[in-house]
Image (cartoon, rainbow, N blue to C red):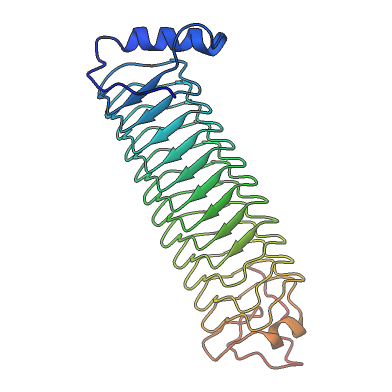
Length: 307
């Protein structure tokens, strides 16, 4: 078993990277990069190829790591706070209990990575790629995730509160027990995903797509869903109280016991009388035709006004 050494690598990191490059090409040559408790703060390792490296307890605070290759690497309890990591490659990496607070990770790749217990507080992850990634118990509060891709990702018990994920792609993802409180996800795409027991309270989801999405057990209290696409979504028992659903599309959505008390459905489209009769409305609900609830059969209130 390869053992890790522990000392100041500031003067020898170039040699370590060179030997690792040889090992990548031919495992009988060079030496695999295995760093433990190393201080690499403020170093410049841009474009370094550390694929399959092992980093444990390493600090890379304020380091310049743009375009670094850490694909298939193992990263444990390491700190990349405020590091520059744009275009970095973490695909298929094993990342556990790491820190990326305030790091610049735009256009970085985490495809098929396994990420657990890691903090991305206020990180810039715009256009980052998480396709097929496993994300467990991670924190993204205040992170910038605009146009990020999470296709087919498995995300659980993770916190995206106050983050911004405008135009992000979550199509075919599987999500459970995640928090998006107060986030901005306008035009995000959750189509054909399973999004169970997630909290989107006070989240801006204007124009977001939830076509054929299973939202069982999720919360949208006071969420902004103006012109959102909820066609064929599973909304049974979902809390949409005081949500803004102006102009939203709800054709063929399952609405049994959906909580629409206090919701604004003015101009909501493709709703049927049966759907509204199965949902919970009250006098504070604004129905598709602009009239106050509760919904009554044969009232015609399901016919939307133009908005």
